Image (cartoon, rainbow, N blue to C red; front, top):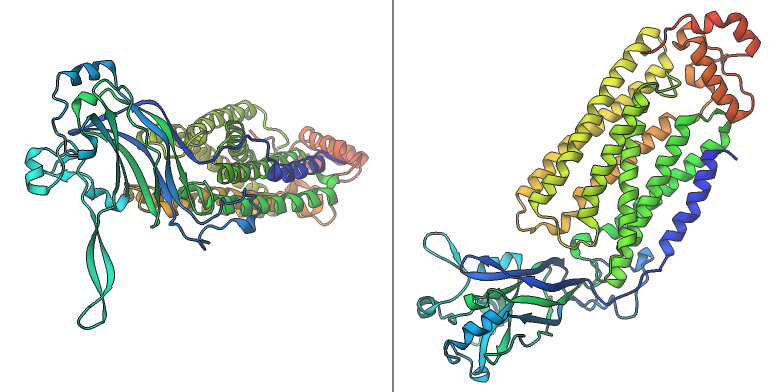
Amino acid sequence: MKRSIKSIAFFCPFFSLLLSLDLVPRIDAAIHAYEDSYFFSVNDAFIYRGGREGLFKSSEDDDTYDFSDWGVKRPAGLANGKSYIRFNKVAFRRSLEDVSEQEEEDENTTNNNENNNNYSGVVQAVVFEVNDRDLVGYVTEDGGRRYCCDEALAKTSGCSPGRVIVRPKKEMQEQIDEDTKEKKLVEVENVDWPWVTDAYFEGKNELESRTVDDAVSIEETGMYYLWFVICDPKLAGTTVNGQTAWKNPSGYLPGMMAANLPFYLFLSLAYLALGICWAVNCAVKWKYLMQIHHSMTFVVSLGMIETCVWYYDYSNFNTTGFRPYFVTIFAVVVSAARKAVSRALVLVASMGYGVVRPTLGGFAPKVLALSGAYFIASATLDVVANVGAIDDLTSGARVFLVLPVAALDGAFILWIFTSLSKTLAQLQQRRQMAKLSLYRYFTNALALSVVLSFVWVVYEMWFKVTDAFNEKWEADWITAAFWHVLNFALTAVICFLWRPMEPEKFVGNKSGSVDANDSFWTEEEMSAVDNELAEAAGHHELGGDSDDDEEGGGGGGGGGGKME
């Protein structure tokens, strides 16, 4: 059995194995962990952003993202329709310097809570939905924003001095009019939202606050933020420890990633179908396999491995709430390798490798260097963006890492279309119509992919610019999914155009002979192709008997000159 068949046969069991592996230790939730994390000064407050995630509303019968039909194994009670943010032993620790300063203050100042007369400081946790962000803080007359209440604001707004300013959310509720007995909508204030809880430092000498072990039930779908806020400058050196668990109705997969689970399942099945079709074609036409066909087998195999590993990564994350570093890093490396090899394959195909030139010659080191650079840049971006990540990258970090990848993509595109132009011109000059037709189809497919890529990049830029607060988080997965679909489509087109076939079909000559119009390789180059096919098929004649080639070799190679 030939190498292409062996590769597909090897990777198919591996594909199935990865979908069912369960070798990672389990924990209980999608966790945002805090380990001695410091607060940052924001206007008049000190804030630590504890996390943000897209969460779907709680429902007993919620089926918005029910993955039970996609083969996801869940422990009992996981897909219970409950969505929440759970605090697990979240505590705050202040420094000895802060305690010393506090001892000099009157322990009863700014005391407004009869049940906490002995506290000497407070840290507040605030949970709000992105559309309610204006309810946290106060906009001053000069357009600035204040987060902490003082004596002056307390008189005008009714807030509590020394606490974060949070205004109740106004909601429309249906009520029955007592006089008319008819239903009507009435605007009421929800004093429980945004959600706020306090963590006190009890006693002036206490270094650690009371722990927070509450849970916030999510009743509306949205992008939720968690802030820890300090309004007392004397607590500026406080650190936060503990963790929060964020759960969706169907599992622990964050809302922005939820659609990736069924997407990668379908894409892995698509790659599996493509791999089977390619393997069958290679098995039937094994006599005509060349080196480029083995490269295509490698690309298809990488696509199969990449998609099923990503599926396992998201499935495990949804089931256990844990993203294992090994699996994610492996998926990232395979993904970067697939991208680099795919681009190299398109490039060498554009140069005419396997069709109009038997070797790459001096171009091989340059192709390898460009592909290697792309692999490193792409792997770096994907590792930082995916390994251990729940929130998105900041815009600055993303731009810094995307620029090298974009520059290398531009180099690939320029080189590919320059090579295509030369290949088409030479095929036109030699009047090799069958090969010319193949390359025209290939050029059209590449041109269409470039146009779609440009349009999609413009759309992505518009999407990011108009979604500064992630209000469109439910559609965010589409921006990355498009590139996977486009790559799969282009891979399928190349597999179809460069499928193994009989020489007479390939050169457009019914007799199978190669005359002056069907080749512009020299005798030496034609001999190299014959040797490659002979290794694959034992003995297969590309242009008639070898004796005939020796006697009439001038006709087969005299019509063409060697490619530069």
